[in-house]
Image: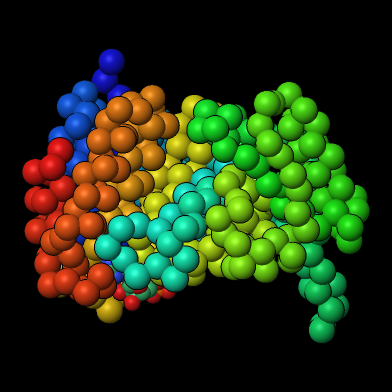
Length: 325
Ligand code: NAI
Ligand code: MG
Protein backbone atom coordinates (compact mmCIF):
# COMPACT_ATOMS: atom_id res chain seq x y z
CA UNK A 1 0.00 0.00 0.00
CA UNK A 2 1.39 3.40 -0.99
CA UNK A 3 1.67 5.90 1.83
CA UNK A 4 1.80 9.63 1.27
CA UNK A 5 4.63 11.45 3.02
CA UNK A 6 4.62 15.25 3.20
CA UNK A 7 8.11 16.76 3.19
CA UNK A 8 8.37 20.31 4.54
CA UNK A 9 12.05 21.32 4.72
CA UNK A 10 11.40 24.92 5.89
CA UNK A 11 14.36 27.28 6.35
CA UNK A 12 18.10 27.21 6.94
CA UNK A 13 19.58 23.77 7.49
CA UNK A 14 16.04 22.36 7.30
CA UNK A 15 16.66 22.54 3.54
CA UNK A 16 19.84 20.48 3.93
CA UNK A 17 18.97 17.82 6.50
CA UNK A 18 15.39 17.13 5.36
CA UNK A 19 16.37 16.04 1.83
CA UNK A 20 19.05 13.81 3.42
CA UNK A 21 16.41 12.17 5.62
CA UNK A 22 14.15 11.77 2.60
CA UNK A 23 16.93 9.92 0.74
CA UNK A 24 17.16 7.54 3.67
CA UNK A 25 13.41 6.93 3.56
CA UNK A 26 13.57 6.34 -0.19
CA UNK A 27 16.31 3.79 0.34
CA UNK A 28 14.30 1.62 2.73
CA UNK A 29 10.63 2.29 1.86
CA UNK A 30 10.15 2.41 -1.89
CA UNK A 31 6.35 2.46 -1.49
CA UNK A 32 6.27 5.96 -0.09
CA UNK A 33 4.92 8.72 -2.30
CA UNK A 34 6.55 12.05 -1.39
CA UNK A 35 5.11 15.50 -1.79
CA UNK A 36 7.08 18.64 -0.89
CA UNK A 37 5.69 21.93 0.40
CA UNK A 38 6.99 25.28 1.66
CA UNK A 39 6.82 26.80 5.12
CA UNK A 40 8.79 29.33 7.14
CA UNK A 41 10.57 32.65 6.78
CA UNK A 42 11.43 32.31 3.10
CA UNK A 43 7.92 31.63 1.88
CA UNK A 44 6.64 34.31 4.30
CA UNK A 45 8.97 36.87 2.70
CA UNK A 46 7.58 35.96 -0.73
CA UNK A 47 3.89 35.62 0.09
CA UNK A 48 3.36 37.16 3.54
CA UNK A 49 2.25 33.78 4.92
CA UNK A 50 4.68 31.44 6.74
CA UNK A 51 2.28 28.52 6.42
CA UNK A 52 0.48 28.47 3.06
CA UNK A 53 -2.91 26.74 3.04
CA UNK A 54 -1.59 24.16 0.59
CA UNK A 55 1.14 23.16 3.08
CA UNK A 56 -1.31 22.86 5.97
CA UNK A 57 -3.69 20.82 3.81
CA UNK A 58 -0.88 18.55 2.68
CA UNK A 59 0.13 17.82 6.30
CA UNK A 60 -3.53 17.29 7.23
CA UNK A 61 -3.98 14.70 4.47
CA UNK A 62 -0.61 12.90 4.33
CA UNK A 63 -0.05 9.71 6.32
CA UNK A 64 2.98 11.34 7.90
CA UNK A 65 4.96 14.55 7.62
CA UNK A 66 8.70 15.07 7.76
CA UNK A 67 9.45 18.64 8.83
CA UNK A 68 12.85 20.39 8.96
CA UNK A 69 12.83 23.68 10.85
CA UNK A 70 11.53 27.22 10.48
CA UNK A 71 13.36 30.39 11.52
CA UNK A 72 11.73 33.43 13.15
CA UNK A 73 8.31 32.18 12.08
CA UNK A 74 8.78 28.80 13.84
CA UNK A 75 5.83 29.25 16.22
CA UNK A 76 3.53 30.30 13.36
CA UNK A 77 4.52 27.20 11.43
CA UNK A 78 5.00 24.36 13.86
CA UNK A 79 2.04 24.95 16.19
CA UNK A 80 -0.55 24.96 13.37
CA UNK A 81 1.22 22.02 11.69
CA UNK A 82 1.03 20.00 14.92
CA UNK A 83 -2.68 20.71 15.10
CA UNK A 84 -3.11 19.96 11.38
CA UNK A 85 -1.96 16.40 12.04
CA UNK A 86 -4.12 16.17 15.19
CA UNK A 87 -1.12 15.67 17.42
CA UNK A 88 -1.85 14.97 21.09
CA UNK A 89 1.58 13.58 22.07
CA UNK A 90 5.05 15.00 21.66
CA UNK A 91 7.50 12.13 21.88
CA UNK A 92 11.17 12.84 22.45
CA UNK A 93 13.66 9.99 22.83
CA UNK A 94 16.77 11.30 24.59
CA UNK A 95 19.76 8.99 24.26
CA UNK A 96 23.48 9.32 24.28
CA UNK A 97 24.60 8.42 20.78
CA UNK A 98 27.93 6.79 19.99
CA UNK A 99 30.73 9.05 18.81
CA UNK A 100 29.47 11.99 20.83
CA UNK A 101 30.79 13.46 24.06
CA UNK A 102 27.71 12.84 26.15
CA UNK A 103 28.11 14.01 29.77
CA UNK A 104 25.79 11.15 30.87
CA UNK A 105 26.23 8.30 28.36
CA UNK A 106 23.93 6.04 30.43
CA UNK A 107 20.92 8.24 29.57
CA UNK A 108 18.16 6.47 27.65
CA UNK A 109 14.85 8.22 28.22
CA UNK A 110 11.69 8.92 26.29
CA UNK A 111 9.54 11.93 27.10
CA UNK A 112 5.87 11.55 26.24
CA UNK A 113 4.54 15.06 26.59
CA UNK A 114 0.93 16.19 26.44
CA UNK A 115 0.83 18.43 23.37
CA UNK A 116 -2.48 20.32 23.41
CA UNK A 117 -3.31 21.90 26.77
CA UNK A 118 -1.88 22.85 30.17
CA UNK A 119 -0.46 26.37 30.32
CA UNK A 120 0.09 26.31 26.54
CA UNK A 121 -3.66 26.29 25.85
CA UNK A 122 -3.34 29.99 25.08
CA UNK A 123 -5.65 31.53 27.71
CA UNK A 124 -3.45 34.43 28.75
CA UNK A 125 -4.78 37.88 29.59
CA UNK A 126 -3.64 41.29 30.70
CA UNK A 127 -6.42 42.01 33.21
CA UNK A 128 -5.07 45.49 33.98
CA UNK A 129 -1.81 47.31 33.23
CA UNK A 130 0.86 45.48 35.19
CA UNK A 131 -1.39 42.52 36.00
CA UNK A 132 -1.53 39.40 33.82
CA UNK A 133 -3.12 35.99 34.25
CA UNK A 134 -2.92 32.58 32.60
CA UNK A 135 -5.52 29.83 32.76
CA UNK A 136 -4.20 26.29 32.87
CA UNK A 137 -6.40 23.73 31.14
CA UNK A 138 -6.26 20.05 32.09
CA UNK A 139 -8.96 17.66 30.91
CA UNK A 140 -9.56 14.06 31.79
CA UNK A 141 -9.83 13.19 28.09
CA UNK A 142 -6.42 14.60 27.14
CA UNK A 143 -4.78 13.25 30.30
CA UNK A 144 -6.14 9.78 29.62
CA UNK A 145 -5.02 9.87 26.00
CA UNK A 146 -1.45 10.91 26.79
CA UNK A 147 -1.18 8.43 29.66
CA UNK A 148 -2.53 5.60 27.50
CA UNK A 149 -0.07 6.45 24.74
CA UNK A 150 2.80 6.50 27.27
CA UNK A 151 1.87 3.18 28.84
CA UNK A 152 1.34 1.48 25.48
CA UNK A 153 4.70 2.81 24.34
CA UNK A 154 6.38 1.46 27.50
CA UNK A 155 4.57 -1.89 27.32
CA UNK A 156 5.71 -2.47 23.72
CA UNK A 157 9.31 -1.81 24.72
CA UNK A 158 9.36 -3.47 28.16
CA UNK A 159 10.05 -0.23 29.92
CA UNK A 160 8.73 1.53 33.02
CA UNK A 161 6.76 4.76 33.30
CA UNK A 162 7.23 7.78 35.53
CA UNK A 163 4.29 10.20 35.71
CA UNK A 164 5.58 13.75 36.21
CA UNK A 165 3.27 16.26 37.94
CA UNK A 166 2.98 18.89 40.65
CA UNK A 167 -0.29 17.71 42.15
CA UNK A 168 0.73 18.79 45.66
CA UNK A 169 0.40 22.43 44.55
CA UNK A 170 -1.81 22.36 41.45
CA UNK A 171 -4.32 20.11 43.19
CA UNK A 172 -7.16 20.44 40.72
CA UNK A 173 -5.33 20.42 37.41
CA UNK A 174 -2.38 18.14 38.11
CA UNK A 175 -4.55 16.28 40.61
CA UNK A 176 -6.75 15.30 37.68
CA UNK A 177 -3.74 14.56 35.47
CA UNK A 178 -2.19 12.27 38.10
CA UNK A 179 -5.40 10.48 39.09
CA UNK A 180 -6.25 9.87 35.43
CA UNK A 181 -2.76 8.58 34.62
CA UNK A 182 -2.80 6.31 37.69
CA UNK A 183 -6.13 4.84 36.60
CA UNK A 184 -4.63 4.10 33.16
CA UNK A 185 -1.58 2.54 34.85
CA UNK A 186 -3.88 -0.05 36.48
CA UNK A 187 -4.72 -1.45 33.05
CA UNK A 188 -1.10 -2.19 32.17
CA UNK A 189 1.48 -4.63 33.39
CA UNK A 190 4.11 -1.90 33.33
CA UNK A 191 6.14 -0.77 36.35
CA UNK A 192 4.97 2.75 37.16
CA UNK A 193 5.57 5.48 39.67
CA UNK A 194 5.02 9.21 39.87
CA UNK A 195 7.35 12.09 40.65
CA UNK A 196 7.01 15.75 41.53
CA UNK A 197 8.43 17.53 38.51
CA UNK A 198 10.87 19.73 40.45
CA UNK A 199 12.41 16.80 42.34
CA UNK A 200 12.37 14.84 39.10
CA UNK A 201 14.53 17.54 37.47
CA UNK A 202 17.19 16.92 40.11
CA UNK A 203 16.93 13.13 39.88
CA UNK A 204 17.22 13.24 36.10
CA UNK A 205 20.56 14.99 36.48
CA UNK A 206 21.80 12.72 39.28
CA UNK A 207 20.53 9.33 38.07
CA UNK A 208 19.22 9.51 34.52
CA UNK A 209 19.63 5.72 34.21
CA UNK A 210 16.74 5.25 36.69
CA UNK A 211 14.17 6.58 34.24
CA UNK A 212 12.58 5.12 31.09
CA UNK A 213 9.37 6.66 29.80
CA UNK A 214 8.37 9.96 31.42
CA UNK A 215 4.75 10.98 30.88
CA UNK A 216 4.38 14.73 31.44
CA UNK A 217 1.99 17.65 31.22
CA UNK A 218 2.80 20.10 28.43
CA UNK A 219 5.09 22.70 30.08
CA UNK A 220 6.84 20.15 32.32
CA UNK A 221 7.61 18.02 29.25
CA UNK A 222 8.98 21.01 27.39
CA UNK A 223 11.37 21.94 30.20
CA UNK A 224 12.35 18.45 31.38
CA UNK A 225 13.07 17.16 27.89
CA UNK A 226 15.42 20.07 27.19
CA UNK A 227 17.09 19.45 30.54
CA UNK A 228 17.57 15.82 29.57
CA UNK A 229 18.99 16.87 26.19
CA UNK A 230 21.75 18.53 28.19
CA UNK A 231 22.60 15.12 29.69
CA UNK A 232 23.53 13.77 26.28
CA UNK A 233 25.32 16.79 24.85
CA UNK A 234 22.61 19.09 23.54
CA UNK A 235 19.70 19.27 21.18
CA UNK A 236 21.63 18.72 17.96
CA UNK A 237 21.19 14.96 17.56
CA UNK A 238 17.71 14.49 18.94
CA UNK A 239 14.64 13.54 16.93
CA UNK A 240 11.00 14.06 17.87
CA UNK A 241 7.53 12.96 16.91
CA UNK A 242 4.22 14.81 17.15
CA UNK A 243 1.79 11.93 17.24
CA UNK A 244 -1.88 12.03 16.33
CA UNK A 245 -4.49 9.32 15.99
CA UNK A 246 -4.34 9.06 12.22
CA UNK A 247 -1.26 11.01 11.24
CA UNK A 248 1.87 12.43 12.75
CA UNK A 249 4.68 14.89 12.16
CA UNK A 250 8.37 14.15 12.69
CA UNK A 251 11.07 16.77 13.15
CA UNK A 252 14.57 17.20 14.51
CA UNK A 253 14.56 19.08 17.82
CA UNK A 254 17.09 21.60 16.52
CA UNK A 255 16.29 24.78 14.61
CA UNK A 256 17.55 26.35 11.38
CA UNK A 257 21.17 26.85 12.57
CA UNK A 258 21.67 30.18 10.75
CA UNK A 259 25.36 30.16 11.71
CA UNK A 260 26.09 27.19 9.41
CA UNK A 261 23.14 27.22 6.98
CA UNK A 262 24.12 27.03 3.31
CA UNK A 263 27.55 25.57 3.99
CA UNK A 264 26.52 21.97 3.44
CA UNK A 265 27.92 20.81 6.78
CA UNK A 266 24.75 20.40 8.87
CA UNK A 267 24.53 17.14 10.78
CA UNK A 268 21.65 15.12 9.29
CA UNK A 269 21.48 12.69 12.25
CA UNK A 270 18.46 14.22 14.05
CA UNK A 271 16.47 14.42 10.81
CA UNK A 272 17.36 10.81 9.92
CA UNK A 273 16.41 9.58 13.40
CA UNK A 274 13.13 11.46 12.97
CA UNK A 275 12.68 9.53 9.72
CA UNK A 276 13.23 6.31 11.71
CA UNK A 277 10.43 7.35 14.10
CA UNK A 278 8.23 8.03 11.06
CA UNK A 279 8.86 4.52 9.73
CA UNK A 280 7.99 3.00 13.10
CA UNK A 281 4.83 5.10 13.43
CA UNK A 282 3.63 3.73 10.10
CA UNK A 283 4.38 0.19 11.26
CA UNK A 284 7.60 -0.28 9.27
CA UNK A 285 9.49 -1.41 12.37
CA UNK A 286 12.23 -3.32 10.59
CA UNK A 287 12.97 -0.40 8.28
CA UNK A 288 13.01 1.96 11.26
CA UNK A 289 15.51 -0.27 13.03
CA UNK A 290 17.68 -0.48 9.91
CA UNK A 291 17.82 3.31 9.63
CA UNK A 292 18.62 3.69 13.32
CA UNK A 293 21.46 1.18 13.21
CA UNK A 294 22.93 2.63 10.01
CA UNK A 295 22.88 6.11 11.56
CA UNK A 296 24.38 4.90 14.83
CA UNK A 297 27.11 2.92 13.09
CA UNK A 298 27.98 6.01 11.07
CA UNK A 299 28.12 8.15 14.21
CA UNK A 300 30.45 5.61 15.75
CA UNK A 301 32.85 5.15 12.86
CA UNK A 302 32.45 8.44 11.00
CA UNK A 303 32.43 10.34 8.74
CA UNK A 304 31.36 13.09 11.15
CA UNK A 305 30.22 16.65 10.58
CA UNK A 306 32.08 19.58 12.25
CA UNK A 307 29.62 19.80 15.19
CA UNK A 308 30.96 16.35 16.22
CA UNK A 309 34.56 17.31 15.62
CA UNK A 310 34.82 15.96 12.08
CA UNK A 311 35.25 17.66 8.73
CA UNK A 312 32.67 15.78 6.68
CA UNK A 313 29.79 17.37 4.80
CA UNK A 314 26.10 16.54 5.04
CA UNK A 315 26.53 14.75 1.69
CA UNK A 316 29.41 12.61 3.01
CA UNK A 317 27.43 11.50 6.05
CA UNK A 318 24.32 10.83 3.97
CA UNK A 319 26.31 8.69 1.53
CA UNK A 320 27.84 6.74 4.42
CA UNK A 321 24.41 6.03 5.89
CA UNK A 322 22.98 5.07 2.48
CA UNK A 323 25.90 2.73 1.90
CA UNK A 324 25.23 0.96 5.20
CA UNK A 325 21.56 0.65 4.31
P1 NAI B 1 19.47 25.94 16.49
O1 NAI B 1 19.09 24.57 16.92
O2 NAI B 1 19.09 26.34 15.13
O3 NAI B 1 21.05 26.11 16.66
C1 NAI B 1 21.74 26.05 17.92
C2 NAI B 1 23.21 25.69 17.68
O4 NAI B 1 23.28 24.30 17.34
C3 NAI B 1 23.85 26.43 16.52
O5 NAI B 1 25.20 26.70 16.83
C4 NAI B 1 23.76 25.46 15.38
O6 NAI B 1 24.78 25.63 14.41
C5 NAI B 1 23.86 24.12 16.07
N1 NAI B 1 23.11 23.07 15.35
C6 NAI B 1 21.76 22.86 15.41
N2 NAI B 1 21.43 21.85 14.61
C7 NAI B 1 22.57 21.42 14.03
C8 NAI B 1 22.85 20.38 13.08
N3 NAI B 1 21.89 19.60 12.58
N4 NAI B 1 24.13 20.23 12.69
C9 NAI B 1 25.10 21.00 13.19
N5 NAI B 1 24.90 21.98 14.08
C10 NAI B 1 23.64 22.19 14.49
O7 NAI B 1 18.81 26.94 17.58
P2 NAI B 1 18.80 28.53 17.60
O8 NAI B 1 20.10 29.08 17.14
O9 NAI B 1 18.31 28.85 18.95
O10 NAI B 1 17.65 28.96 16.59
C11 NAI B 1 17.92 29.33 15.25
C12 NAI B 1 16.58 29.54 14.54
O11 NAI B 1 15.86 28.30 14.51
C13 NAI B 1 15.66 30.55 15.22
O12 NAI B 1 15.11 31.36 14.21
C14 NAI B 1 14.60 29.72 15.89
O13 NAI B 1 13.35 30.37 15.92
C15 NAI B 1 14.53 28.50 14.98
N6 NAI B 1 14.09 27.27 15.66
C16 NAI B 1 13.15 26.51 15.02
C17 NAI B 1 12.71 25.32 15.55
C18 NAI B 1 11.71 24.55 14.79
O14 NAI B 1 11.42 24.87 13.66
N7 NAI B 1 11.16 23.48 15.36
C19 NAI B 1 13.24 24.82 16.83
C20 NAI B 1 14.27 25.65 17.40
C21 NAI B 1 14.66 26.84 16.84
MG1 MG C 1 11.17 23.53 23.92
